Length: 325
Image 1 (cartoon, helix red, strand yellow):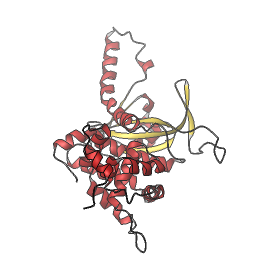
Image 2: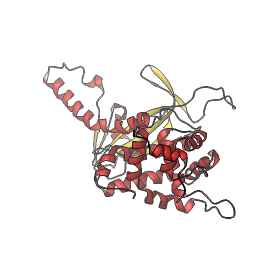
Image 3: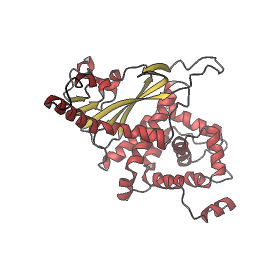
Image 4: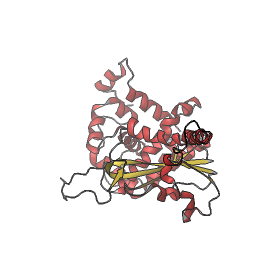
């Protein structure tokens, strides 16, 4: 066991537990580390013939912290030097901290082998085994993730894979994150990333796992049941009606009251899809894309939604006594 540094000794004597520290303690207990290590290990370099590679578990922990706290590669390296709790969570010591290039290469390794989707599957399998992810119904929705619209860069152009779209009376430039969530738990089971100008209804077939008995969506998905790819699907489509279809009925009339009660009941189920969006945007601070191109951003968003699934059920997992699995 290595001798404790002065910084670590001073940190150990503090009295207040910060929110960041509580977050890392909880995530340390609920992340299925063994399953994620088994997923990545076949692709991880062994460090032969030179300086040994950093432990895979340490790099995985650094990667998850980087996503959860929104650090760039240089900022993550500096944070590991400056913040004791981050080093303790990753299992690293001050005498050997991965530099920004090593952190970048690990992220590129995951992107190259498309392992972000595997991370989501491993975590969802882990949650499904504990009865926290059901497969009876799916709620679909999409959110716009902003991208820099400035052309003050090396190429003098905006990202060609991002596009502009109009929502209400406002224009947005960026991409869309389309998700399918479990209607009971609100946990994300599928994700598709597109340019912002792609219609939500065109992506539904990629958000279904095939075992649903019903699908919920807002009015943007009107007509989804009539699309060719869904003609053979035997499920109930619970899509919100456009306000114009029932506002013509007086609120106090029987038809008006019935229509509004039906739409309210639909909205109560549909609200589950907003929870993962809130977590990644407010808890993890992800409101703008951090890379150029769709593929890198989709990989990061997939990792963030996987973490959001654990975040939303962490109390239940800890109540089950699930630690360090």
